[in-house]
Amino acid sequence: MDEKTIIAKRIAQELRNGNLVNLGIGLPTLVAKYLPAGVQVFFQSENGVIGMQPLPEPGAASDALTDAGGSPTSIIPGAAAFDSVTSFCLIRGGHLDVTVLGGLQVDEAGQLANWMVPGKMVPGMGGAMDLVSGAKRVIVGMTHTAKGAPKILKTCTLPLTSIRRVDLVVTELAVIRPTAEGLVLQEVADGVSVSDVIAATEARLIVPPSVPTMQLAA
Image (cartoon, rainbow, N blue to C red):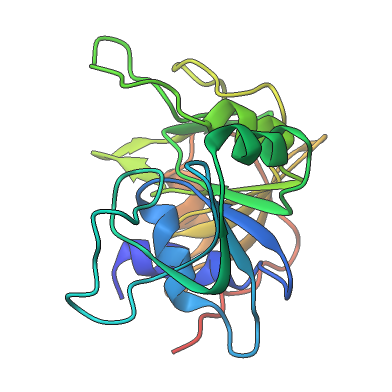
């Protein structure tokens, strides 16, 4: 199982029946493919849709229906479409149950940096700042390292998306829960040891006496 699939499958287990969920661009969009059986959530996109779903079959893409990143998507029966003003009223008004975002860095305070790399061309921060500030629960899905360098740091070196502490960080190695006391190692991936996670993490981790293995559906 590849890294992105591990992350998306584990995040999908955090979603609950009836949740209104925003999926960020890139890796987070994969979460929609791995919802547990019997769980129905409503996926929202900043460009003005509630009721997105993965394309039902190859060739079903339409240029008139995309997610916020411009990738083709589909909708469920009864889906709603509206302008971006209404969409951001939902986000800023605290109506989203969950947002799932990618990450460049997360620090010991649970703060996320995910919108800008200095010196690189930046199209804009999109809705990331509003999503982190407005959603009831913020889940970050990202690889644990980049080119061998840790992405979970003592202090973010990239511009912060928000000063809010995110609720959960899921990587291919671990599930980490930011708290007021620090980053708690909640789970490790199958075949990964606590020592492996600590070695790949710059930030200090709070390690409970027993750390369970991440359970993923087949």
